[in-house]
Length: 269
Image (cartoon, rainbow, N blue to C red; front, side):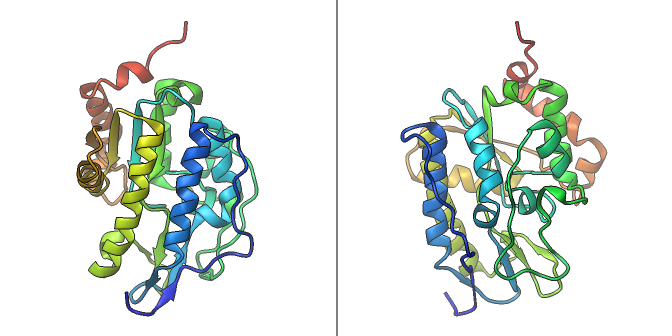
Protein backbone atom coordinates (compact mmCIF):
# COMPACT_ATOMS: atom_id res chain seq x y z
CA UNK A 1 0.00 0.00 0.00
CA UNK A 2 1.12 3.59 -0.53
CA UNK A 3 2.79 5.27 2.39
CA UNK A 4 0.30 7.48 4.16
CA UNK A 5 -1.70 7.71 7.34
CA UNK A 6 -0.99 4.77 9.62
CA UNK A 7 -3.37 3.32 12.19
CA UNK A 8 -1.56 4.62 15.25
CA UNK A 9 -1.47 2.60 18.46
CA UNK A 10 -2.92 4.30 21.52
CA UNK A 11 -0.97 4.70 24.75
CA UNK A 12 -2.77 1.80 26.40
CA UNK A 13 -3.03 -1.33 24.30
CA UNK A 14 -5.98 -3.65 25.07
CA UNK A 15 -5.35 -6.83 26.99
CA UNK A 16 -7.30 -10.03 27.46
CA UNK A 17 -7.59 -12.06 30.64
CA UNK A 18 -10.97 -13.86 30.60
CA UNK A 19 -11.34 -17.60 31.19
CA UNK A 20 -9.85 -19.43 28.22
CA UNK A 21 -12.14 -21.28 25.86
CA UNK A 22 -15.28 -19.24 26.48
CA UNK A 23 -17.16 -17.73 23.51
CA UNK A 24 -16.30 -14.24 24.72
CA UNK A 25 -12.60 -15.02 25.05
CA UNK A 26 -12.44 -16.53 21.57
CA UNK A 27 -14.30 -13.56 20.14
CA UNK A 28 -12.07 -11.00 21.82
CA UNK A 29 -8.92 -12.89 20.83
CA UNK A 30 -9.95 -12.75 17.18
CA UNK A 31 -10.42 -9.00 17.53
CA UNK A 32 -7.04 -8.50 19.18
CA UNK A 33 -5.39 -10.42 16.36
CA UNK A 34 -7.24 -8.27 13.83
CA UNK A 35 -6.00 -5.15 15.63
CA UNK A 36 -2.41 -6.26 15.14
CA UNK A 37 -2.91 -6.66 11.40
CA UNK A 38 -4.84 -3.40 11.03
CA UNK A 39 -2.02 -1.57 12.80
CA UNK A 40 0.26 -2.37 9.88
CA UNK A 41 -2.00 -0.69 7.32
CA UNK A 42 -1.63 2.85 6.06
CA UNK A 43 -4.13 5.06 4.28
CA UNK A 44 -3.71 7.93 1.87
CA UNK A 45 -6.17 10.56 0.72
CA UNK A 46 -9.02 11.17 1.19
CA UNK A 47 -8.49 9.60 4.63
CA UNK A 48 -6.94 11.92 7.20
CA UNK A 49 -8.11 10.41 10.51
CA UNK A 50 -8.56 6.78 11.51
CA UNK A 51 -10.15 5.82 14.84
CA UNK A 52 -10.11 2.29 16.26
CA UNK A 53 -12.60 1.94 19.14
CA UNK A 54 -11.30 -1.60 19.73
CA UNK A 55 -8.31 0.18 21.24
CA UNK A 56 -9.43 3.39 22.97
CA UNK A 57 -12.91 2.01 23.86
CA UNK A 58 -11.72 -1.51 24.68
CA UNK A 59 -13.05 -1.24 28.25
CA UNK A 60 -16.67 -0.73 27.21
CA UNK A 61 -16.35 -3.05 24.22
CA UNK A 62 -15.08 -5.84 26.42
CA UNK A 63 -17.94 -5.20 28.87
CA UNK A 64 -20.36 -5.70 25.98
CA UNK A 65 -18.71 -8.90 24.77
CA UNK A 66 -18.18 -10.42 28.21
CA UNK A 67 -21.80 -9.68 29.16
CA UNK A 68 -23.58 -10.87 26.05
CA UNK A 69 -21.36 -13.16 23.97
CA UNK A 70 -22.46 -16.55 25.32
CA UNK A 71 -22.67 -20.15 24.21
CA UNK A 72 -25.69 -21.23 22.18
CA UNK A 73 -25.95 -18.26 19.84
CA UNK A 74 -27.51 -18.96 16.46
CA UNK A 75 -27.59 -15.57 14.70
CA UNK A 76 -24.88 -12.98 14.12
CA UNK A 77 -26.02 -9.53 12.97
CA UNK A 78 -23.20 -7.93 11.03
CA UNK A 79 -22.78 -4.21 10.47
CA UNK A 80 -20.13 -2.65 8.25
CA UNK A 81 -18.08 -0.30 10.46
CA UNK A 82 -18.59 2.15 13.34
CA UNK A 83 -20.65 5.29 13.11
CA UNK A 84 -19.20 8.54 14.50
CA UNK A 85 -21.81 8.80 17.26
CA UNK A 86 -22.27 5.06 17.81
CA UNK A 87 -19.51 2.51 18.20
CA UNK A 88 -16.90 5.24 17.76
CA UNK A 89 -18.12 6.66 21.08
CA UNK A 90 -19.19 3.56 22.98
CA UNK A 91 -17.27 0.57 21.62
CA UNK A 92 -20.56 -1.22 20.94
CA UNK A 93 -21.84 -1.97 17.39
CA UNK A 94 -24.69 0.40 16.47
CA UNK A 95 -23.85 1.84 19.87
CA UNK A 96 -26.16 4.80 20.24
CA UNK A 97 -25.38 6.06 23.74
CA UNK A 98 -28.85 5.88 25.33
CA UNK A 99 -29.36 2.32 24.11
CA UNK A 100 -25.92 1.27 25.33
CA UNK A 101 -26.27 2.85 28.77
CA UNK A 102 -29.99 2.53 29.52
CA UNK A 103 -30.85 -0.82 27.90
CA UNK A 104 -27.63 -2.77 27.47
CA UNK A 105 -26.27 -1.41 30.79
CA UNK A 106 -22.73 -1.13 29.46
CA UNK A 107 -20.19 0.70 31.59
CA UNK A 108 -16.48 1.46 31.49
CA UNK A 109 -13.94 4.07 30.53
CA UNK A 110 -13.48 5.37 27.00
CA UNK A 111 -10.22 7.00 26.03
CA UNK A 112 -9.21 8.87 22.90
CA UNK A 113 -7.68 8.07 19.52
CA UNK A 114 -4.02 8.97 19.17
CA UNK A 115 -4.88 11.55 16.49
CA UNK A 116 -8.28 13.15 17.04
CA UNK A 117 -10.14 15.54 14.76
CA UNK A 118 -10.94 18.75 16.68
CA UNK A 119 -14.55 18.60 15.46
CA UNK A 120 -14.95 14.87 16.10
CA UNK A 121 -13.91 14.48 19.70
CA UNK A 122 -14.61 11.24 21.51
CA UNK A 123 -16.68 11.86 24.62
CA UNK A 124 -17.61 8.23 25.22
CA UNK A 125 -20.71 7.38 27.22
CA UNK A 126 -21.21 11.09 27.87
CA UNK A 127 -21.78 11.76 24.16
CA UNK A 128 -24.93 13.87 23.80
CA UNK A 129 -25.41 13.23 20.08
CA UNK A 130 -27.79 10.38 19.21
CA UNK A 131 -26.88 8.11 16.30
CA UNK A 132 -30.01 7.48 14.25
CA UNK A 133 -28.96 4.08 12.91
CA UNK A 134 -28.15 2.77 16.39
CA UNK A 135 -31.30 4.21 17.94
CA UNK A 136 -33.40 2.48 15.28
CA UNK A 137 -31.51 -0.81 15.45
CA UNK A 138 -31.48 -1.30 19.22
CA UNK A 139 -34.87 0.41 19.57
CA UNK A 140 -36.49 -2.33 17.49
CA UNK A 141 -35.01 -5.12 19.56
CA UNK A 142 -35.86 -3.35 22.78
CA UNK A 143 -39.51 -3.30 21.67
CA UNK A 144 -39.44 -6.96 20.65
CA UNK A 145 -37.45 -8.40 23.52
CA UNK A 146 -38.08 -6.04 26.45
CA UNK A 147 -34.92 -7.30 28.17
CA UNK A 148 -31.55 -7.58 26.37
CA UNK A 149 -31.04 -11.12 27.68
CA UNK A 150 -33.89 -12.29 25.46
CA UNK A 151 -32.17 -10.90 22.38
CA UNK A 152 -28.71 -12.18 23.29
CA UNK A 153 -30.00 -15.64 24.13
CA UNK A 154 -30.06 -16.21 20.39
CA UNK A 155 -28.25 -13.28 18.73
CA UNK A 156 -25.11 -11.21 18.83
CA UNK A 157 -24.09 -8.04 16.99
CA UNK A 158 -20.71 -7.40 15.42
CA UNK A 159 -19.12 -5.10 12.82
CA UNK A 160 -17.09 -6.44 9.93
CA UNK A 161 -14.59 -3.57 10.19
CA UNK A 162 -13.78 -1.87 13.51
CA UNK A 163 -12.25 1.28 12.02
CA UNK A 164 -13.89 4.62 11.34
CA UNK A 165 -12.43 6.94 8.71
CA UNK A 166 -12.68 10.72 8.27
CA UNK A 167 -11.35 13.24 5.81
CA UNK A 168 -9.59 16.47 6.78
CA UNK A 169 -12.94 18.19 7.35
CA UNK A 170 -14.15 15.46 9.68
CA UNK A 171 -16.59 13.97 7.20
CA UNK A 172 -17.23 10.28 7.81
CA UNK A 173 -15.90 8.01 5.06
CA UNK A 174 -17.27 4.50 4.67
CA UNK A 175 -15.06 1.65 3.40
CA UNK A 176 -16.53 1.84 -0.13
CA UNK A 177 -15.21 5.41 -0.33
CA UNK A 178 -11.59 4.33 0.22
CA UNK A 179 -9.24 3.83 -2.73
CA UNK A 180 -9.79 0.30 -4.10
CA UNK A 181 -6.40 -1.15 -3.13
CA UNK A 182 -6.64 0.18 0.41
CA UNK A 183 -10.26 -0.92 0.74
CA UNK A 184 -9.51 -4.48 -0.35
CA UNK A 185 -6.45 -4.83 1.88
CA UNK A 186 -8.56 -3.63 4.81
CA UNK A 187 -11.62 -5.77 4.14
CA UNK A 188 -9.62 -8.90 3.36
CA UNK A 189 -8.16 -8.76 6.87
CA UNK A 190 -11.60 -8.07 8.35
CA UNK A 191 -13.13 -10.99 6.44
CA UNK A 192 -10.49 -13.38 7.75
CA UNK A 193 -11.36 -12.26 11.29
CA UNK A 194 -15.08 -12.66 10.51
CA UNK A 195 -14.50 -16.28 9.53
CA UNK A 196 -12.74 -16.87 12.85
CA UNK A 197 -15.61 -15.26 14.73
CA UNK A 198 -18.33 -17.24 12.94
CA UNK A 199 -16.51 -20.52 13.56
CA UNK A 200 -15.81 -19.73 17.21
CA UNK A 201 -19.42 -18.76 17.91
CA UNK A 202 -20.80 -21.62 15.82
CA UNK A 203 -23.76 -19.56 14.62
CA UNK A 204 -25.99 -20.93 11.88
CA UNK A 205 -26.94 -17.61 10.28
CA UNK A 206 -25.20 -14.31 9.56
CA UNK A 207 -27.48 -11.36 8.83
CA UNK A 208 -25.74 -8.47 7.12
CA UNK A 209 -27.17 -5.11 8.10
CA UNK A 210 -26.96 -3.43 4.73
CA UNK A 211 -26.06 -4.85 1.34
CA UNK A 212 -22.31 -4.36 1.62
CA UNK A 213 -21.99 -6.28 4.88
CA UNK A 214 -24.21 -9.04 3.50
CA UNK A 215 -22.24 -9.28 0.25
CA UNK A 216 -18.81 -9.30 1.88
CA UNK A 217 -19.90 -11.86 4.47
CA UNK A 218 -21.37 -14.18 1.85
CA UNK A 219 -18.24 -14.01 -0.26
CA UNK A 220 -15.80 -14.50 2.61
CA UNK A 221 -17.63 -17.35 4.32
CA UNK A 222 -18.25 -19.17 1.06
CA UNK A 223 -14.60 -18.86 0.03
CA UNK A 224 -13.55 -20.24 3.41
CA UNK A 225 -15.90 -23.21 3.06
CA UNK A 226 -17.85 -22.27 6.18
CA UNK A 227 -21.34 -23.69 6.03
CA UNK A 228 -23.49 -20.89 7.37
CA UNK A 229 -26.59 -19.20 5.97
CA UNK A 230 -26.04 -15.56 5.00
CA UNK A 231 -28.99 -13.18 4.71
CA UNK A 232 -29.51 -9.45 4.93
CA UNK A 233 -31.77 -6.73 6.27
CA UNK A 234 -32.03 -3.10 5.28
CA UNK A 235 -29.58 -0.74 6.96
CA UNK A 236 -31.33 1.76 9.28
CA UNK A 237 -29.22 4.67 8.01
CA UNK A 238 -30.94 8.07 7.72
CA UNK A 239 -29.24 8.34 4.29
CA UNK A 240 -31.77 5.77 3.07
CA UNK A 241 -35.19 7.35 2.31
CA UNK A 242 -36.99 4.02 2.73
CA UNK A 243 -35.35 3.49 6.14
CA UNK A 244 -36.52 6.94 7.17
CA UNK A 245 -40.06 6.06 6.14
CA UNK A 246 -40.51 2.50 7.43
CA UNK A 247 -37.27 0.81 8.54
CA UNK A 248 -38.83 -0.92 11.55
CA UNK A 249 -41.69 -2.43 9.54
CA UNK A 250 -39.36 -3.60 6.76
CA UNK A 251 -36.89 -5.09 9.24
CA UNK A 252 -39.62 -6.90 11.19
CA UNK A 253 -41.05 -8.38 8.00
CA UNK A 254 -37.61 -9.68 6.99
CA UNK A 255 -36.94 -11.11 10.45
CA UNK A 256 -40.29 -12.89 10.32
CA UNK A 257 -39.43 -14.29 6.88
CA UNK A 258 -36.13 -15.60 8.26
CA UNK A 259 -37.79 -17.22 11.27
CA UNK A 260 -36.02 -14.89 13.71
CA UNK A 261 -38.95 -12.81 14.88
CA UNK A 262 -40.59 -15.68 16.80
CA UNK A 263 -37.37 -16.21 18.78
CA UNK A 264 -37.06 -12.56 19.72
CA UNK A 265 -40.73 -11.94 20.46
CA UNK A 266 -41.09 -15.07 22.57
CA UNK A 267 -42.50 -14.37 26.00
CA UNK A 268 -40.48 -15.78 28.86
CA UNK A 269 -42.23 -18.49 30.80
